[in-house]
Length: 301
Image (cartoon, rainbow, N blue to C red; front, side, top):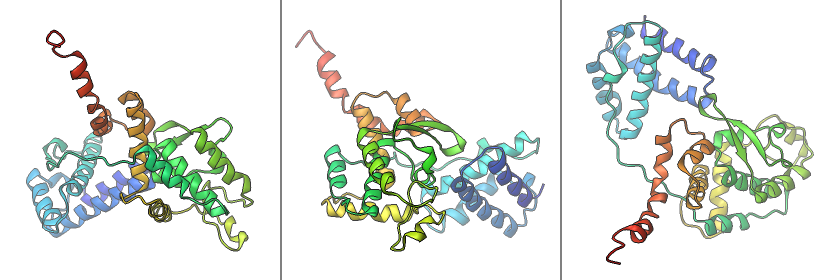
């Protein structure tokens, strides 16, 4: 099977069978297209011809030499692994994906906002107009739910209930999970929805000087939300970098600090593996000193 055909069929499988999000499919397309172009340069026509040595050469020539970080290199290698696993399940005789070795990376550091900083930024968002009400609702939603930015921007108005304060969202890999709103988020979202007069189905949209333009069936972009967060963080005097994902980290951190177990946080974040959630164990580690002090060497104490 040609490499081009293999990648084309795999991407179709990601959309139709796996139900991956557009962002995930777009990323796979980017990673595998670079690999496909490299195989063409090397006159490797069929995917069955690819060897572990070829993968190393690809990594050196296309990833290492152009200065991509080790974590970015791994994204490309993981995509090739996923392609090979798919082909093996289709009885195509390709190399084992386990032969692809990922680059060792440094332990991931999670940065987050303290509760008082979260409150400062929310207070700095003015609510004198429709856009201000929207911005405060977005901010409260992100911190209340731990939603990924792609999940937030795709929300429709009929998905979210400010009465029950809970709804379902489809995350990575098409996995559906429950999402819950705090009382503060319910209030902020309700204030925004109550004054909307457009028929745009999306929950968060751009508001124009001409209200008729609000009816366009487009959501607010992730980039607009990032700019909005930066603006209000500066207004609040917060010097830390801020992003929708940092609010997701802050959400998880707050849960763990207040006694939530790692498995529950995994479910609320929509992580498929507990290993992904364990990046937050730096939070629970802080309590180990108290455990040590309370329970160790009690006889001498």
